[in-house]
Each structure stands twice: as C-alpha cells, then as structure tokens.
Image (cartoon, rainbow, N blue to C red; front, side, top):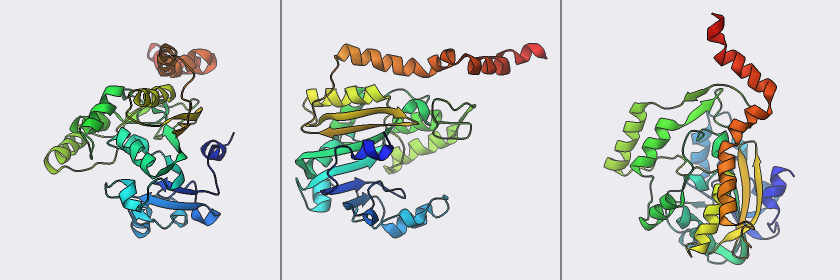
Length: 295
C-alpha cells in the first residue's frame, strides 16, 4: 500500500479538513481539489523565505489559512465540531503538549472525524540514540501546560541527535557511520534560551517506536485524558509509521503485556537485523573489528 493510501484510507475526501504544518510538502494540497484549511506557524510568504535555500520546490507551498500562535484550534478557526479530518505529518513529535494537541484537534473535529498521523520511527532518524518517550513525561508536560520544550528536553536533544552516513533519516538497510550533529555549546545555549528567555526551540520532544506510540494512545484514552482511540495502524516503512485516530476507534487488539513485549522487540530489532543478514554483518566485522589486527 502506498503512503497516500495509508494516510487517506479513512478520510472522506469530499469532506472538509485541516492539514497542520504542511510546510513545503502538503499531503492534501488545495490545487488537487481538497477542501482543506492549512494551519502553520508562518504565512505563505514567510514559509517561502524560510525554505528558499533548502533545495525544495517552493511552488508546493500553499496559502496558509490560519497562522497558529499557540491558541486553541477552535479559537483560531472560529469553528467547533466542523471538520471531517485532520492530517499532521511529522508534527506531533514537535508538540510541547502531546495530550493538548490531540484534544485541540478533537475540538474542531466532528464526532466521527479522524486524525491521520505520520510519525517518525526513532530507530531510523536522528533520534536514534535518544530514549523512547514514556507515559510520565507526556502526562507531566500536559499537567504543566507546557507551551515550549523543557530545558531538559532541549539538552537531551542537542547532546544526542545524530546523522547516519550524513543523512538525518534512513531505512533498515542503510549502512554508514553515526555522527553527532550538535555541540555541547549548542546544548548550553539552547538551555539558557529556554530558561532565561522562554524561547520555543523547534525540535522533537517525543521519540517513539511504533508500538510505544500505540500503547501511549491506548493508555491516554484508558486514563480519560483523550477521547480518541486507534482506528488503523501501518508499521514502519523507511523512517515513518502511520496511525489514524477517532472517537469511534476500537483501539488496540492486544494485551498490555503483549504490547510491552513488542516494544522491547522493536527496540532490539535493528541489532537483530545484522544477525539476520550475515553477509552484511561479516562486512562490518571485517571493516571495523578485524582491521586493527591486519595492521
């Protein structure tokens, strides 16, 4: 199944929707006939300026209907229970308040509306060496009504994000060395900006493997913190997985213990890839372990 089929499988294309943060790569562009309102942090002219030196197709940037400055989507759009769908690709991991974002979306969705999310798998992107986000951090951030990332999140991000073979996202089959992207000084500067100036620094606050995300949604619903459950899920392809949520979702069909076991196996999966692909493993062993013995 193609990416578009996974994202739009439960979306009524004749209905009205929102795409949050499409930036220079909208998945439901107006020029293709979608009845969509765009929410982004900058207007079209500002987005063009932001990306003019990034080697992207600036013609893909569409008119931004609502420039978000931290207010509820219902306040921003002037609508409640109006939209049939919301799409957010590679966005939820940036939100300082994970729970608040989902409830914000729910306010403007019809009761049978859906949220279609594309989420990076931390195993195959720059978050590779960062810990999987647990439930406690997500609940604490919501109870504190965080509008910016915490100093600890900023420090952990800057000290641990990596590139692999100079790429910030990759798939299971990509080889190459890891290199840290940021310096200690950048981590210190980022912390100081948050502590002293209350600055929002754009980064991934949350890191997931597919089933850790699914379990968090299940737990948040079970605890009464969100009204949404899983409708559908597609595992990682490349560096991202896909999940659709709705008030009418049926949730996961596995026990909590099963989910925890799957999460553990996902975290171990990349290491086991090398044992399953012996030729590749032999190549790495010869290159990195035996080389010193040949000198």
